[in-house]
Image 1 (tube, rainbow, N blue to C red):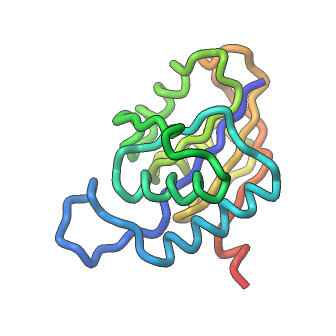
Image 2: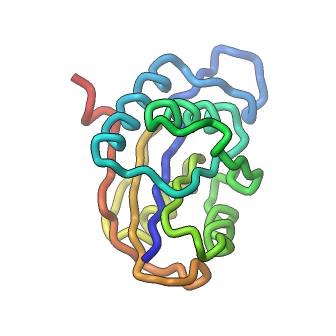
Length: 162
């Protein structure tokens, strides 16, 4: 059994004259990420390992989660392949994970995460919103055998706002 938790980065700011890679989170992105991370903490779902895109908004979202889940930031593994928008690099990354890893969390981007959620999960989503999370379980022993799995849950920030 293998599990992937995909987390789309929080809402980013367009206020600054920076390249896409360096765009920071808006305050709403930080707050929404805290809400989703808190819900994940309540579900007692802490993965073995956490990977993040190096883009500022994804890595910042990852750090918000790490703090909420009480995981030291030095447990984040940043991988350039996760700065991907169509999903091919992310899928290839997942298929090449070491098999001793059972449960991983990945912070990244759309359209890749909506696409991957729909290809491999069994619950269709139109769009994974910013700070949105999808957990998918797979009945496989080897990551190279990645195939259709079961969507355990989807956490959407707007569903958690009061």
